[in-house]
Image (cartoon, rainbow, N blue to C red):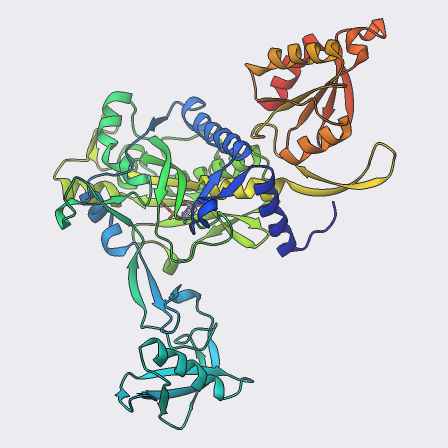
Length: 541
Ligand code: GAP
């Protein structure tokens, strides 16, 4: 693989995503809308495959997890109980010159001279407009810059030909985050900004009709805990999982789809016994310091072991979709970084081309959420544990992943540029998306060698129809076979089947065989059409 520079790589990935129909900008013909994205034909398949694999791994491959699909808009009290109304905020600042909004913690500290102004005289009327303002002029920039910016500021406030009144002398500052690094203008004081998107339910836009688009899928699981428990006949420890849309009015959506305003989450809330109950029932609570075997859950596991168990389960899951351990990092949040509800949180990070960033968080949430909903709704969230003969509010371990970040990670991981020989033996560059066959949008492409030979075309269509009800198949008869292979390499299709004259019996011993090309090695094997389906099913499972 050629060494692609980081920024170049991201640019190439974004361009390929559009060109091949993985991801488009939302509302593109109207100039787009920041923080919103659409998945094209290949992206939609990829997303579907990832979600389905996650869902199957949790619900079908285990006995102790049940699924849920809840509404996006829920009772607004839920967000009071969860703390989102009061604490789901970012500190933000606005530029007084451009009105652009920034997250306060993302302002680069700057040093230089601050020029202060008490206001400005209107050059046309002589009136004085009194609004204090200041500009930071970084080291190396001429002092006139401060005055120029101040003129623009007062002009915007309706002062004609402004003559700013300076309050000398300029004041030296070090590492200040009060000024906009883009133009030196003063910023507003940091203000809390709630990230939940608001709407009104019903015909009247009044405060009592305010509702929110959910900022996470988790809360629906907590509020439906009792219902699911009743109908699923599960016993603690057990989990409820959900896949669905979440919305956050992010101040700075960025890094392609990484931080979006509309995204999907895949969350599991896994309910466990509190350590005190285990202590009474099993006498000793297993902790990580006991070095427990994490391969099969035990009744004496305390929250610490369950937490680590889920971290390991999730890391293995990522490996199963083709993200090897060396592309991932486990980050244990420090005490001061933990959310108010968390006893411990591990972030699973992926090494994106733009930096190592969070894919999923696995939090030990204690009984915070169920207790809060019990308090706010007045409905008991207690569980009677027949085995332990105890009544308690279960504790929770929460693996919470973002689908869109995962898609971005598998796309970045799959993108490769390789020098390979063309049909004449000359080296050319191929772009190949090396998706794990399990999640690849299209599993197999079927090609008749020539499109103007009906016998080849008919046979190829027969093969396509044979495979089609078992996997996503792409049929392509246009252009030279080498070009067709390259198109599928870019789409990340792991297998290519070619129907040639030997398939038709030109060499009798090869009749009803096809060539099967492997995307990654580009090697071709010949196998019988009757062997094709089981062979492919084995590879894409
Ligand atoms: N219930 C816990 C929770 O929502 P979170 O860390 O805020 O925790 C979980 O979100 C996951 O959701 C993140 O690890 C990330 O993958 C995804 N996510 C969060 N905000 C996102 C955004 N603005 N755009 C895309 N994905 C996001």
